[in-house]
Length: 116
Length: 113
Image (tube, rainbow over all chains, first blue to last red; front, side, top):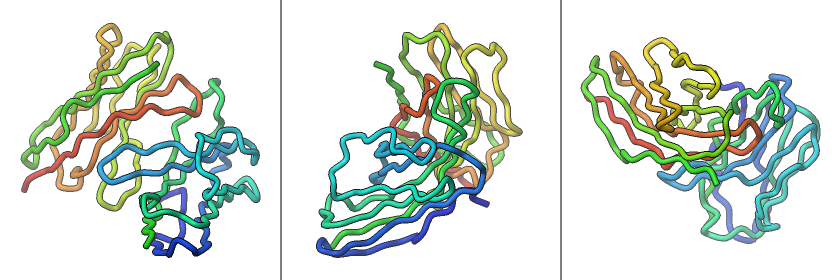
């Protein structure tokens, strides 16, 4: 059973649409992440939230807008995406992002996004 | 900068046999963490095993074990008694202890019946 839940599993949208991806965890983790993964490639980090505040933005285009409404939820708002944005979007969480007591990241099973 | 290299893009193994996936990395840090993640067709990245660099003892988790050679900067994964459910993409990952994971390019493992 996955401890990080992502919805929807699949999403098809046009380039002019607005949609959101959702991620939820109930492990008490204070760090949450968005990754983008293209086929047969490793995940690429997009955003990191720590204690509900955006800590890291890996130079992601503004058509991707993250939001952390509370410590359990992480959203990714999508607007005016391009065909090259089609990918698997993975959410992950971990206890902290600092060095002390480092714990591994736990991943959800992703949202497969297709842009028409 | 840290790098992680997985030199085997694809491997196959007969069911019940043993297979070893290789991973090498480069870092100037003295303490760090290494992970093997498994990503089956169901897509979820599942943590298989982790190793802390300051620990000499190789980590084991049931049928999964690692051969950690710190001086050689090598971190291979051994899967014993391979099962069909082990078919997946396997990613080696490095972390210096912060949020940033450096992933290898992955090894696609197929277990044959």
